[in-house]
Image 1: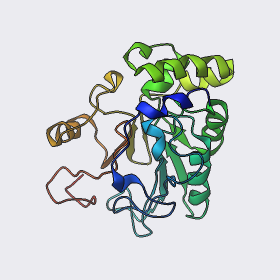
Image 2 (image 1 turned 120 degrees about the vertical axis):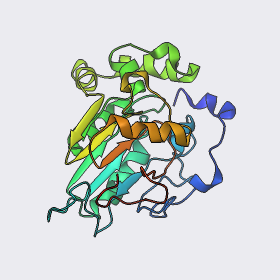
Image 3 (image 1 turned 30 degrees about the vertical axis):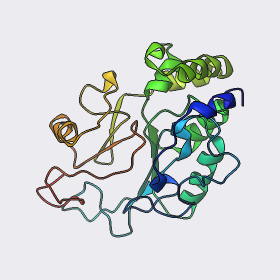
Length: 239
């Protein structure tokens, strides 16, 4: 709670993010943090919402031509917000998913880094490292974070055990599993933490992964981009 004083100078995210749990901010099924929750808006922008994206029942991720159906839940940019993480995991429990993956930034900003790392370690089948995770676990790149992010990184580094810090440090920058590429920022030079903010940048990413799907976090913006205009689902010949 020591970071709560910085709330007043944090910009609010667009209104379309402010949805209640089990309401959707895009065309996907998702769970998000209720802005009226006591835990909402306590620290900084990434904590306004934590999404769990769950594939629709007839969805066959990246296994074109296969009879195997895998339902995958994705969580990302938790930023030590335990109430949001618990709300999302509770929603996932009712979705009959096969696996859960985390797209990084489990720590940074929020008040419960230890508990969030423990939950991600216990509940996720795979995870990648984010730039805030790297700042905390490896003490690298903290100077590029906002001032409040730098303060949080130092605090979280002091709170986490050596075992948890080692676990965070060992997370890969890119994970390929179940026919999906998982990366925190971008498959193009993932170590630079590129923030994809234009269609041109998004289209360039298709040159840097080979799977049908690539899932990213980092921007805190929900969206779907295909390698062809108007393609929002993978089908033979598209990604």
